[in-house]
Length: 575
Image 1 (cartoon, one colour):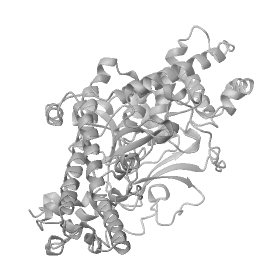
Image 2: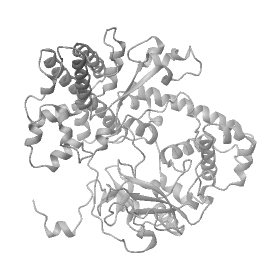
Image 3: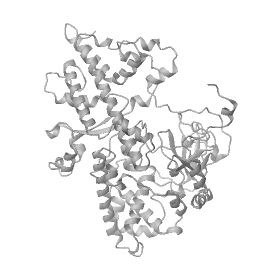
Image 4: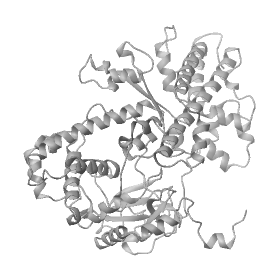
């Protein structure tokens, strides 16, 4: 209905806001000390309210005190209060210099230094400059700290296997650091619980460091929770306050904003859904005969949901490769330099709503391993699995038993999974064509073109193989998606809630892919029985266009190959 005057003058409360917990944290002395510390050390955030608690668990985050439109800078943190590789410590320099490989040459040397800096500062207690910051961090936890019983709730043995590998790796890391620090009892006294210090430093660095200037910890910016929003990291110079020119830096400069931009929000809709939402006349889209014809209607619409590519997972069995890129210029020593967050072109925060940052385009697998939580309706989530590539002489699914046996390493000692397997990531929004290509290339057939679909009977056989694989995945789950969602609705909390979100998302993606393949198989069977591919939209309904839209890339490729065949052969196969 129409908005009332009350709607226009009084902003709605964020439904996630926990007012009771907010009152509690605002009265906690540690948060009051921290806020004073931020202000005393030059942090600026006049558009934000902190601390504010959200969700039933009372997770502390940040609230917008006023509307924050696109291209608005809302956080300014001086670089000289961040924790970074240039954090001054004459005491630790001796350890760096006498253990050069571990702290300067090793591919993870920057992480090793950061662990040591955090351990040393934590050991100093209230004497540390960053003590007020450490006080509010609270308990940080990823699934590496979950019990084996808690991990089984994920219903994914592969993420459990991967988390156990991470644990083994960090145990090895602690042994290395412990051996080094045993030579420096006058810096790290042996009476201190070194394992506790290392574990804390590891958790803080892994869950809170920004991927900025070789990774760094940034007070205040670190206290903003994650969502899939368009928020930009930026280095802001006090003597150049208008760069980039399209961004409003008035929270720093005090100058009035040059324009009052309307609030804009990312919808995460596909081009098709944006068209349907924006157009009252649905006749053009209902009159389509083939899904590729929709392109002429969607010209002015764009969407990252349609074009998004699968993000490869980092192979945890080996150290990450050293970067070959030239080092970027660093500004960390400059007092007149600030780390800044500003909203992008399609990002806004309404007054009274939670303000978010983005940790990156991360699947729930990434979020659980790195940060300890999972998100409902995460547009970047994927259902990951691996298949043996042809170089191994093996084919089909890589099982957990294969990973645990590690027999792929026998041929090449330094081999990783990426050398012998192919990673696939199923998405909710579109048919995964790479799985079809994988099975197509294994077929012993006279069909020459195997990179894309060209033979109807072959594609029908491959569709059955893909469905068989997906049904095999479904059978490994010990609960249905309906049961998972019901438990979430009933208020599951903590680790169980994240496990339910994680596994229900996997099931949602898998079910969607099965529906896509079944619809594709229906179209292929119609073509195989003599109907032209160009007339695959039968019902002329909006629901059918939506159902077939995720198959567009596959069907366009099939049409092109059939048309090419019709040129080369007579009679034609497709007109």
